[in-house]
Length: 333
Image (cartoon, rainbow, N blue to C red; front, side):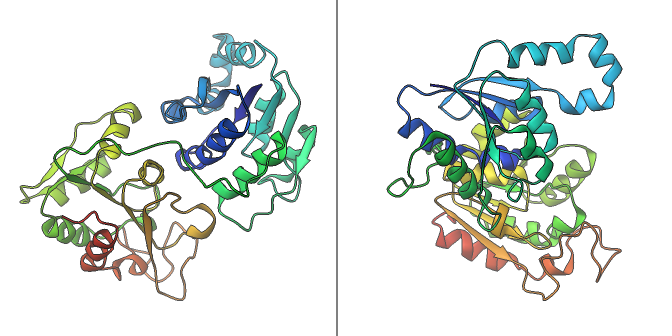
């Protein structure tokens, strides 16, 4: 059977699809999977062993410069790649109008969430078969149920498995994932520095852009065990995460990748609700804000709107708490 999966973004959403792919590969003999995904996340999609090829969809570039993209033939390339061969099944795992439109370009019967389950209910109008999977469980669980319904198998005796494994251990090190999109998702600089001081091993930091680099340099200042890695793409970051003895992360996509690898991962959650889209993996724990106003799902803190880094709900979490959580997962050395 040939399956086309449409799951365009984001990094966390892509990773949360992995358990469903592992299920399908185990339950459907001879399954071949192609994945339509935004080009920025194609390196992550290719990490799953069930994926034969990725069809990159440059939606961000197409939306920024549609005329240039169309005149350059990029849109036609995507259409041709999607229609190049027939599929036995097409599953839209995102439930958005843009993902449903991409799925509609492929040749094959289309499945997706029904109107009550999809993120954008109108997207369901483009599916031939719709499945009711209410948004009351983690997205990874919902995707497992969607795939099982579309492909016709049960999940009763099938444990969740992302299909990824941590890299063989060498010299132990920790990874701190400090970068995120919202100011309210950040932890305090003092918290990161205190946690690095507690670590008895090397701490590795990534930085994307000037703002994250400035924070990483501030975390590393005067701490010999902290190393800022050079800028690199997801192909380079993934092995660093897979080989870590432990990861501490704010609510960011790379944290989901760490969890999927089975690396001991501690997630720090303040304004966002981790119940539906939190860390999903065999060795994770989440430290959540204890304030009544959390989770607020806001990019700007109502209590301390002037806060640039470390809103009150996250500054309540101490480095000692995080270190203890790492220890409970067997990562603190």
